[in-house]
Length: 204
Length: 279
Image 1 (cartoon, each protein chain N blue to C red):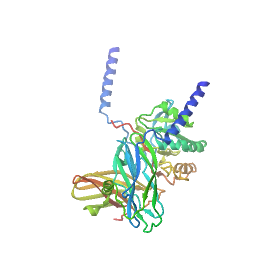
Image 2 (image 1 turned 30 degrees about the horizontal axis):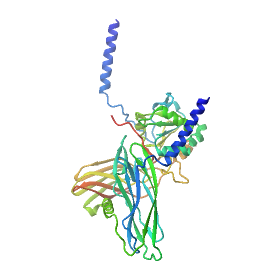
Image 3 (image 1 turned 135 degrees about the horizontal axis):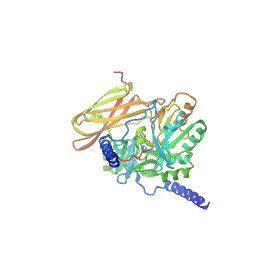
Image 4 (image 1 turned 90 degrees about the horizontal axis):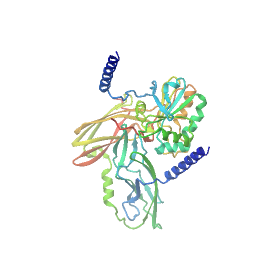
């Protein structure tokens, strides 16, 4: 009896491995589009907790693509850009998630970064690049806003000031969050993202 | 607990250390130099003034449209009374493919970004012209390091200009994109923002290869799905473009540069794509 179970299990195992080998690559085809439902994902945060986008349905979610080696990200962290926005809207059911698609990122360094800047939000690890590709994240930072119905309502650069020279930059994310929370349509749903290129793992 | 306090102090020290290092990057990936094609400035003439960037191997800096990431190199000239500079003229860029197929446009090895300067005919009482340039760039390889330089060049005023660095400036002139018709390249464009799909059909008098297309940047325009097919005497560029809601288009035409190899030489032409054709 035991032998036949082991034998069946082995057959299933072999069949399964065979099917996996024949299956197409695991790169998802889904690309997030502004105006459509934001694709769900599950990633681990810096403490190893699993976080899914669907955990927050009914809330507004901001995704911030991060890479602590990137000068654009460093500048915004030194200026407190994201922490200020996250803090401003945290009592209005706005969830902020940073996603690190840098292929060489480690959760140790993510934790250091959080400690260094006192971040009120987690950094999710996406070193395989799967979620980055799903959302077509090109730069760090690259911002996405998902409304309470789970629709992607904003994608693009945080503001119109890549050089960081403007006295009064237009913050597209702040503007969009205000509109979403007021129940209005987002007037500027896309802006050119700027930053370092996302350091994706090389294609297999 | 002392342990936590120690860790906090360490983090703080690291933070300060990182900030200080950031202001003065450990190794300069890019050297910038202010250069002119004359050693003396003569009243009533013109000369070329630019910044020569020399990059360490495999490091690049960016074109005025950096592509999907990066940062355009910028130069601001501070000229004394009597000198007026035109816009920076940019050599044809090259394309970098970064992991994830993220497009970057720019330069590696070295590049000269220069402008034509005209000189007032009356410079009486002026012996020397102190010229300054403030420049900023982003140099990238697998990481990115920002850089900047405040440059100075003092040129004496004289009766006749003494040409300088002729080879450098001649190479720069040759690298500038020219009007398509002047080189026998025909470009026909179709498409409009209403369909979002565009085609540029190129006809070359002589066989061309390694054809690339570089759109200028417009913060209101999203350009995607760029494809270049063909070589020899015919090539086709297709792309998608959409006006992003809430932004203003800066022009009804999309300026672009086509680079190609022909007769053993690297060439570049300007092609303008109307965005709102009705037919």
